[in-house]
Image 1 (cartoon, rainbow over the protein chains, first blue to last red):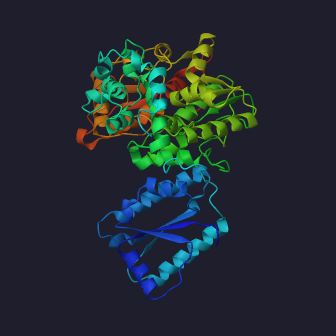
Image 2 (tube, helix red, strand yellow):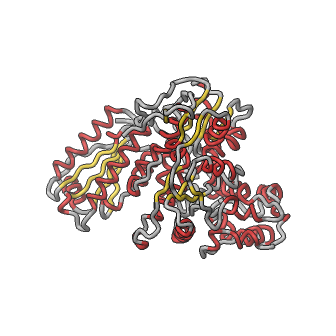
Image 3 (cartoon, rainbow over the protein chains, first blue to last red):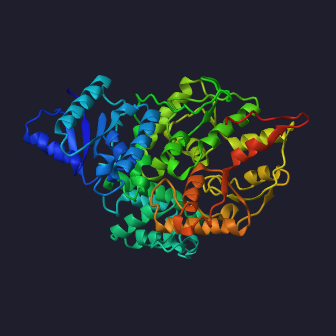
Length: 141
Length: 398
């Protein structure tokens, strides 16, 4: 597992409830995944996903609510359209569109969430590390 | 870094800021100031010389400039404002980090920096159709720039910058040139350079030059004025002894048309022309695009109130600082275009196309500013034909 950096972006509502319940139930999670909790996946725009790859992520998974469960309305739809466009950009860049994954969960699906994380982790593991590793970081000097 | 740093003194001296007479013509012509923004090129140079301790004012001002060069055009003392701003940004970025509000949260700068990875194998040529003849290696290359990326990123406002690239290749094919199109080509680095990220800009330049050399390229044809400025003016600074000729597609076309044997089909439209800052004021090419347009029969070219070297910026540069003031510049520019009663706005830069199209889509204006916007290359490619025979340029993919 060494050398692979994964980022999971969790919506605060259903996916975080699953994540929390999975933690309470001591389900084992992939060890190399960093999680970031946001209020809604609709808050994540194309730039933030690209930024994760710029800063060295090998895979990014967006964990969101089911379309009809969004607490705010259009969150998951915004997520779908951003993922669609960023995947096309990742394809152009040669990073590979499969490095960006989007999964949705209802609030009780803790084992599904953990399963999806393991599946994602194994998939990225098989793909190896992200070929785009900018040598210098422009912004954090 | 302190602002009494000797490097700043060096920039002030090299860019002739000491020559400033404080006449204020720069600020009086600055589109950003005229749109109401608290930014003044005159005050910036005044404070930099007399009150260097006022760091926050100076830093904010340095990141506000559009680098459109209108102030430089008007300055009677020859202060090199654009170069000064670029060098100050590079210096401040190197010591205090990059600042300035990055439009779209910096997504464009992100993909530009991602392209600095040497091992990247892009898939940037999916748009190439069988109707376009291109080569893998040879003496002449066409530089496509960021068009494939723009079209995906800006699919929300429905711009088609790839049409410029396709039509450029159609034009080259029409002139019996089969250009090399490189899959490993990177962004030219214009936006990184002008937003102070010199380090990554230089990496992009070196990678691009390696690609050109590997394909045996001796001449690069460019259609985007920003790419042209970078490859022609700034790339030789990074690569000493650069052995590469850079040609603007419009210049090439004009030379070829003068040789004879081709003409333009009539286009019965009333058009106006937006001079891109990097083509008009930077390269001094205001006449050349107009001369090409005048070769098209029945095309009535109506000039906007501010045109040629006085043309107003499309509101944004290098994808930083897009805000309500940028919108105001764009709206006023589009109103100028509307006032000509033209139904076609011709420009020569994909960025002008993106920014003005975005302003046209403003829901508050309810479509009152919308008009057809096309790149000059596309207009010319559709009208050109060989004289003496009824054969026009190769067909466009449906």
